[in-house]
Amino acid sequence: MKLLGIDSSGLVASVAVVEDGNLLAEYTVNYKKTHSQTLLPMLDAVAGMIELDLDTIDAIAVAGGPGSFTGLRIGSATAKGLGFALGKPLIQIPTVDGLAYNLCLARSLVCPLMDARRNQVYTGLYQFTDGTMEIRIPQCAVGIEEIISKINGQDSPVIFLGDGAPVYRSYIEENCQVAYTFAPAHLNKQRAAAVASLGLLYYRQGKLQDAAFHRPDYLRLSQAERERLAKQEAVRQPAQLEIRRMEEQDIPAVARMEQQLFSSPWSEKSFHEALGQDVLFLVAARQDMPVGYCGMYCSQEEGEITNVAVLDAFQGQGIGRRMLGELLRQASVRGIRRVFLEVRVSNSKAIRLYESLGFQNCGIRKGFYAFPREDGMVMQYTSNR
Image (cartoon, rainbow, N blue to C red):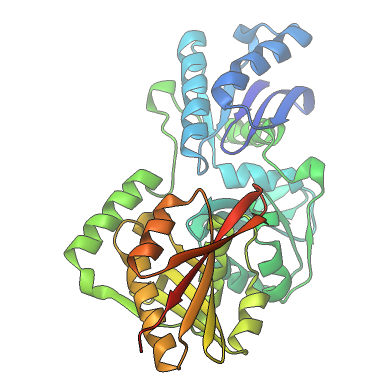
């Protein structure tokens, strides 16, 4: 039994050939080239190194989602094309299952975390007994707090892996209540060898499909579709946006917003500490879910605005202006007469917003920003009250 495995569901591109219990070849790249540039040359290189006649393979196992929309389409198109050309069946492997199968001999629970952005992870929970996989929680798209809450209800230690593990490591360290570890580098990303090995089990169970019927399982709408629907909903129900003081329960969502939008993000711990000081934080919430936030340190008659952030899907709706307007109003009530902020000199959109609210350029701080390095413009607002 010989299977070709393909996984391009994330940043990693991987091709492997497995025959019975042997891995004949694997080519895995975790680099910034697009999969359309790498996948077929990798397959050609693997076939050449082991003198593989593709007609001799029995089936093609492909990571079928969830994951990167572009990556999944490239992997699926490659598998479908080969399936049609060779007359071979496909075996669709759920991406999170395949990722978990890297650790098929683990005694702990296995929790893959793929960064799905938008405050979510693609994840699941798995238990292995003598290599047999038990799916405790099927693959799903949920917030990191939800999967950690479910893990805390388990009675076993857990191993985290996947590209979402480093993204949410600080959250795991602060909130996971069971013993945990992180998978080592050679096992912590998608591998076509695991996809092909799991494919062998599926093949014996008859889980095959014709190439014509293969479709990736995205688990959720694409970013463009989500943003379009979010904007349509905002137009229909604009009154549902609420500007209010930030509360402790808002911090996980706000910290994830920071991770997505800024190169030097605040941690959850930083927000908790700041809430205990003389800092005024506001959130913009829809149906009690923060979609934007802003904050200001207060000192006698002066205030310094920290970050102003709005999730991509809700930008262009005036949310930043509304938050800043309310922030300046509350600052004035507190007796604050001068408010300062810094903004990247290249961020013309933000500068225009601040100017429309009454801020003026009062200086430049050379090399103020890092990642990338850039000057910061200092702007000042003076209250008329």
